[in-house]
Image (cartoon, rainbow, N blue to C red; front, top):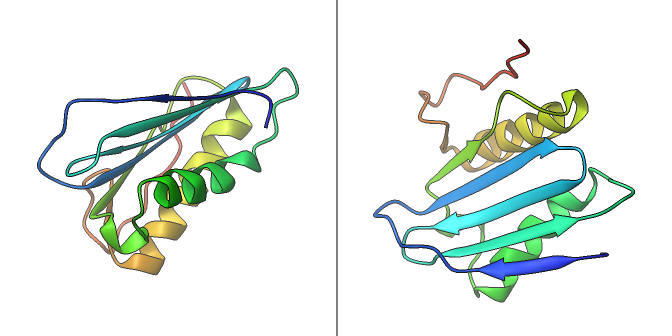
Length: 116
């Protein structure tokens, strides 16, 4: 990976995994709740494949698994068409596989990208 940055955030009560792939040059994956961590990746040659690697890395470096995550949040609008689609697809897949909510929706609902 060309560039990765770690930043701390103020903790919230629910353990959230947040995915922002809306920028075609930068991906942001973060955890909030009991653990607070932000992982940013910037690349001149954006590759959406890094999103899954980033999720794996942020969980690994905080010594937790996907079982730690109680909800997934994802940016659904504004930005890169492909990037938003990739982020939404990953969020929905994780929500389905782990039986957790995505963007606060009921478990039987999926998030959809919003194009304006």
